[in-house]
Length: 356
Figure 1 (cartoon, rainbow, N blue to C red):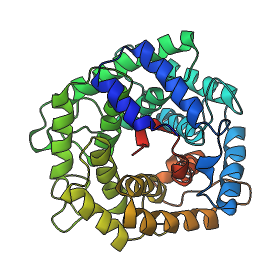
Figure 2 (cartoon, rainbow, N blue to C red):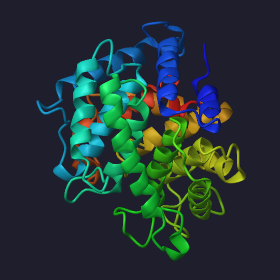
Figure 3 (tube, rainbow, N blue to C red):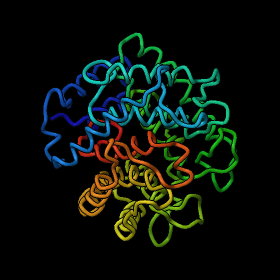
Figure 4 (spheres, one colour):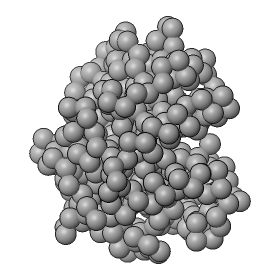
């Protein structure tokens, strides 16, 4: 099987034009598609595959007629972007196969949400909307039809420029990061993680992302690392599972492999296993699964099976997952289900951004 991550690294380093990148993306996606091979599915137990299939059946029924997925108005772009990413993580695409119309419809909905300045967020929305939707558009760029690809390329160019401009706002000790709004004067690891992954995805697609932006983002992440392991929401704060998963994942995806801070973050996650019902649980299952995949070895063996068992146990009979945390309830069942499916589908390795 081809290694998508290796080829994309070579593509971005060689500054291959986006059109050529898209062709390579399509060829690699087909080579790794479940329509082509079922090898990737073998590590996933039958009961987990059943849970995943049931989850996607439920999620597909939730799409609204306009293409979006239900959530509070200010969160709907982010929730819709996460739903699309979940389908992509299982190997579904917007051009062919099951759910392709659903995915294409949702991508079109997200494109319609972009404001003239490039911000993909509604009134009252945040950089969470923007970062998540930009990551999603990064991932679908090489999958959509040529006419749609031109629209996605234009949207991405504006979205990435907004991210880069927002990072330059003077933030003092928070320099290099991002916060809820583009003009904020502080930053947090959660918003920052999405923007950095959006930049990484754009670079994978051949965009010229300034190295200084990546270095500054890494600097902010490292200032969030806690002396005794784990990552804080902001420099000087206490560690937590969701923020630690974010910090480890972002550092690994930005090429900072096996840094002491990332390994200490992995050790923190091993020592603090997730518990259903805790704050930001579904956000944490997503990021901790990705972090465990990036670190591999004992971290993957110790973190992912625990998360997988919990998610299968707490899935509702209809196929969805339900958040209990007050803040996560704003995203609703679609948000929780998308995050759970993204976590469960990590072993399929279909999302290029998250490949090791």
